[in-house]
Length: 68
Image (cartoon, rainbow, N blue to C red):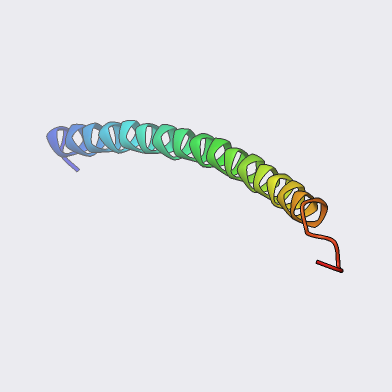
C-alpha cells in the first residue's frame, strides 16, 4: 500500500472512532433521560393510584344512608 492510501485509511478510522464516541455519548444521555422519565411516570402512577383510593374512600363516606 502506498503511504498516501495508508494515511487516508488512518484518517477515516480516526473519524469513525470519534463518531462512535459521540454516538455512545448520545445513547448514554438518552438512556439516562429515559430512566428519569420512567421514574417520573412511576411516581405519577403511584400518585394516581393513591388519589383513586382516596376518592373511592371519600365516595363511600359521602354516600347517603341505605334508608334514603
